[in-house]
Every structure is written in C-alpha cells, then in structure tokens.
Image 1 (tube, rainbow, N blue to C red):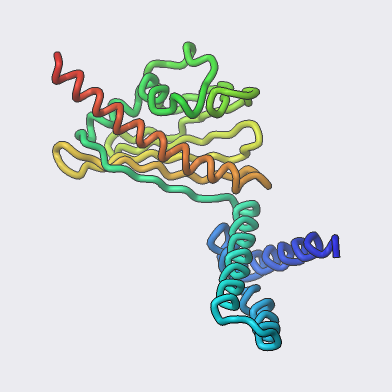
Image 2: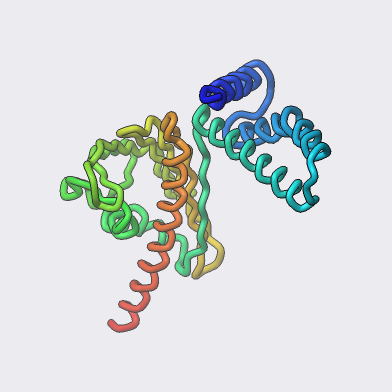
Length: 240
C-alpha cells in the first residue's frame, strides 16, 4: 500500500503526457486540470457511487467527499500540467495617471527598484543604466526574495521596447528558473488614466507551481506599489 500513491502518480502522469503528445488535447495548467477531472469522472466517481450505495451515509457527506476528491484530481492535474509545460500569469491594474507618464516611469531604474522593494532584493544595481529598459540590454544580477537567504544568479535580456505601443518584453532566467518571459503593456484609458498589464510565462521544472504562486503575488505586489508611487508623486507635486 505504501507504494500505491507513487505508482498511481507515475501512471497518472504518463497517460497525460501521452495524451498531450499524441492528440490535440490541451497542454499546460488548463489541460492538466481537464485531464484530472476526466480521470475522476471516469475512474473514481463510479467507485465512489458504489461505495456510497453500500454504506449508510447522509447525502451531505456523500456530496462533500465527492467534491473533495474531485478537487484533489483537478489540483493534481493542474500541478502536473504546470510542471510539464510551464504556467501563464496575467495581472492588470488601472493607474491614475496618463499612459505617457507611466511609460516614462516604467523605463527608469529607480521606478523598478521602488516597485519591487520589500519583496525582491537585487545586487549590483549601481552598475545598471538609469534607463533600465532599452533594446538589446542585458542585466546580470543576483536576487534574494524578501532580501533574505542566499542570492541566486538572474539574467534579464530586454527583447523589445516599443514606445509607440508602450510594450516591453524581457526574457529572463536564473537559478532554478529556466524560462521567465515577461511582457509589460500600458494602454491609455483616458487623459488621466491608463491600464498597466504584466503577462508572464515561466517554467521551473518540478517547482513551477511554487514559483508560479510566488510570481502571482509578486506582480500583484508590484502593481500595488505602482499605485503608491503615483499617489506619492501627486502629493509631492501638490506640495511644491
């Protein structure tokens, strides 16, 4: 019985990878989640129904157990899909400033350090250019989440800076992260408001789910810091 979970995990994963490679079945987190629910419906649900029919239990308990097990299969499938194919993350926020103003700030080193301060520490920032994002720029640094623990190598290569579309694309990697592709986009909503969007694709092998969760929190944090930065800028202008 002790090896059963391991054997099941191997078989569960092998069938998904085979299905993904030999058919048009979706890949990634979405495909993994669909696969997990499918396995539950075909393989486990009939067994549960037979067990429920043979046991004296309330409908509420039967439903609770069914939902609990379905969620376990869904999460297991989603995790497997992320490990196999990576994860896509998107976060957007409306900012109380003109798009051109936010674009000018986005390019600057001091803005980047301000919006990441408190959640990510970078070494050797004194050697970085003041205009951080310019075409063909490559930044090599060492990073420490929350500023604690050992630092790991990280490289940021600026792939695209499109001022007309207000889009920046970077290709990053380092430590246990093999792929970290980041797109930043600013869209004008009105004369005094814009939408800022982060889109990320990342892959880090078996720890992809954990890195993905960290990235979701990290970019939401950065966007919160964007609001704070703009609010302080307005207050400073009001006092001057």
